[in-house]
Length: 221
Image (cartoon, rainbow, N blue to C red; front, side, top):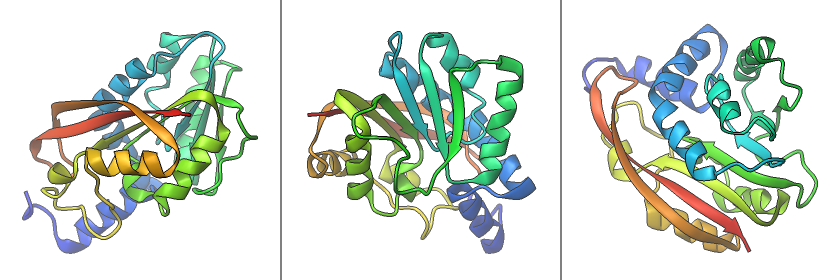
């Protein structure tokens, strides 16, 4: 697996995964959607969206999963946040077909969430944890915008699995479930449950691999 791409190509894959840009970013995003849909679908199922919930997704990519998300509860309000202008534009294309006024996409800075205190019911994010610049403070920021007893789902592939991937280098910070539990405690959130899962997927470097991942359910105290 490590010999299929040159160091330059692997560095470009890593860069695009952390911040998709341009045509290559769109290509990578399409691949991410295909490979991450299982993780995203499982995360949405665990989230248990209720009627009237305000739900925020952090780092939605091209948001090819939007149709599935809305099928879980048409009476929710969904806000997608992205740091990538390319992904923001790609996600906007989903709205043309759906014509759902309860959906919006916003660009944000990557560290401060554009919401007032205690205004969001549920937050979820899939495969973005590795790229958080200041994980503890960012989780505190998520806690700030959540209502009391609000839920944040953080879904990520395990450190041991990520270390086997050829494109994972300096831009990634890797985690074990214990690491995420420690983050939750630091942000004064309760790790209510941790779901450990595995699935077979095609890696960005082209090989079929068995991915081990967790869905961590954090609750604001």
